[in-house]
Image (tube, rainbow, N blue to C red; front, side, top):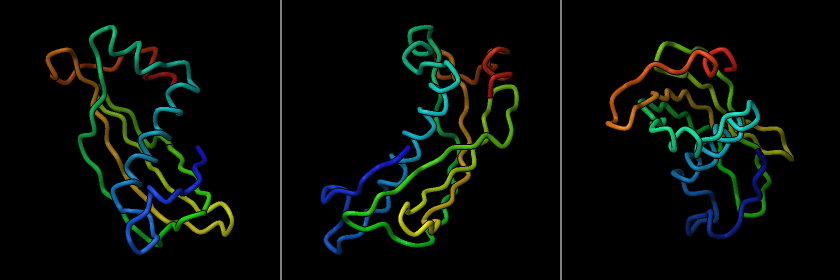
Length: 125
């Protein structure tokens, strides 16, 4: 997923505000699911959702106003109710890795209790 950095993405120093990387990585995970035929809206309509259980981020370098970045999402492991993602954000012009993250999602039912990920979904991931 590519994103151009606009002024509203940055702080007063012209660098991307640290929390915005979470949004870029969320968008990359959504694209990951959709490319595999899974709609977050469809999961919600069925009474299921995903929530971030754990997030470990390493900030290596800043993105700045005008940069073009890409965020990716790779599944490292899938358990009965969790998906373990490795993600990164890269400056497209320089190729420099700006952020690396390990993010764990948990699959939840309508009562926000952990639920086993449907077999078809687990196999597609």
